[in-house]
Length: 222
Image 1 (cartoon, rainbow, N blue to C red):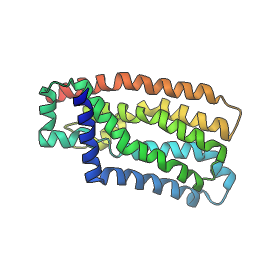
Image 2 (cartoon, rainbow, N blue to C red):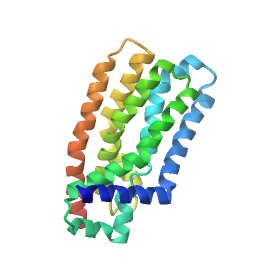
Image 3 (cartoon, rainbow, N blue to C red):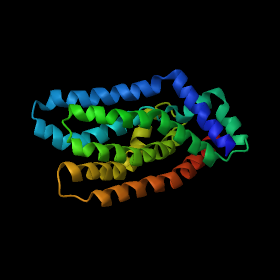
């Protein structure tokens, strides 16, 4: 497992050194949410009702922007071929890449979410649930996104193809994440059931994502 965490640390250092992907994701998230009050007008009750959906949709789209870099940089520099021939199985390589993406992109987006909730007049009682759902559901974004990044590794328009491939996989995470927050904002609703289903989707993605991404990488590298 030392090799696994070494790869995670390497990718985190590269993300920190470059900074562009994380900054772009945060900036996109901020712009999308900031435009909502301008487009919908000063109706604070309307903003409060749509806040859960807008926060989750904005987070998903923002995280999607950086998925294309998950394997592309290593592929261009020949590092991916070395990793494929190394002692670490490709499944763990894909998992390490997804973990690094989650820490460098999804965690900052999760931290920014409560601040953006203020712009949408989100009920204060929903903030703990918002943070909990984003932290519980965002790993699925990275692990399922790794599948799309691996499938489009050598594509010229990988960003568009990743969106087409991955967005349908994000639908359960989106539905249960919004439902959990809406259970607090606009009851009635089952908060516990939504959180359990969201966690189940994340656990399934943790198991399936690296295996599917590794299979796609073998096909691309072979």
